Amino acid sequence: MKVNLNQAMRKKTRRLKRAAKAAAIAPRPLQKLRPIVHCPTQKYSAKARLGRGFTIEELKEAGLSARFARTIGIAVDSRRSNRSVESLNRNAERLREFKSKLILFPKKGNGGDSESSSWVDSSTEDCENATQHSGSLMPITKPEKKIEIAVITDEMKKTSAFTTMRVARKETTVDGHRMSVKNRKKD
Image (cartoon, rainbow, N blue to C red; front, side, top):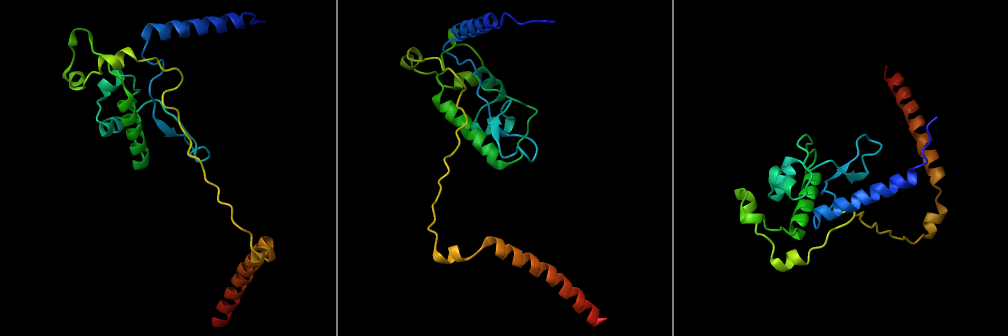
């Protein structure tokens, strides 16, 4: 039998390691930016969640290359493909929003590839005022559903949904019987 009597200590160790990692990479965020994807299978396809990484098409739509995106904290998944234009546009807009909020620190010695030098480094004031973001980057926000309250009329009170459905079901049954009788008379 194996017992876990050191759960509290392991929890403390994990917390301290996270804090040390955050301090080492500060002011960069701990987590990468991830796309919004829909869960597989018909049962869960209405639910949106954060995915593994952005597709190459989404990055191109936002004006980024995969290589440069990885250096600025964006998760890239070259195996994923876009199945709808709506999700492509939504994730490209997510990347553009992230790009607008991004504070790009200058590299030491101002060297590097041509693509990163084409990006304009942030001002020294922005770099000095930068703080580390905690939690998930740009979490999924659910749109608020507006509920419209309709006034119940006297006509609505008089009608019965159950009766209406029962009559419709009976009519379809009788209609099928009528069609078969009509076809027999033609023969």
